[in-house]
Image (cartoon, rainbow, N blue to C red):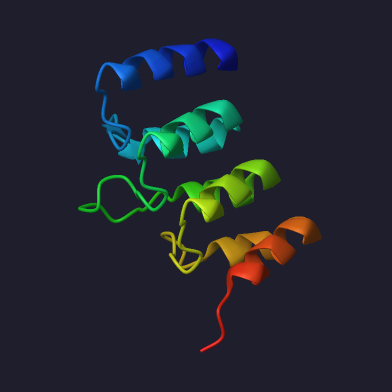
Length: 122
């Protein structure tokens, strides 16, 4: 299934589809959905075609859906690394006022170490 979605996604992006489009009533970005499904190929495809790694969906609503937070919740190291390399902001907070690092604490140590490397000292 993931192979098919990546092929379809590639075709749509080649035809000019917006990689930052927000989907449905829950206002999640396509990138967020790909992260929630653990679809590495689609996440890479979207980022390679200009998807914003900090797109939180519809900014006019109370809840924010950040791709990085979703990837950390899923303990998906490869997708987390892709998002960070694409410029994902580790300081953004979700509706529970939690960051990716907060969720990472509940996750594998490997992910915490990856996130900690991106923290800059002030």
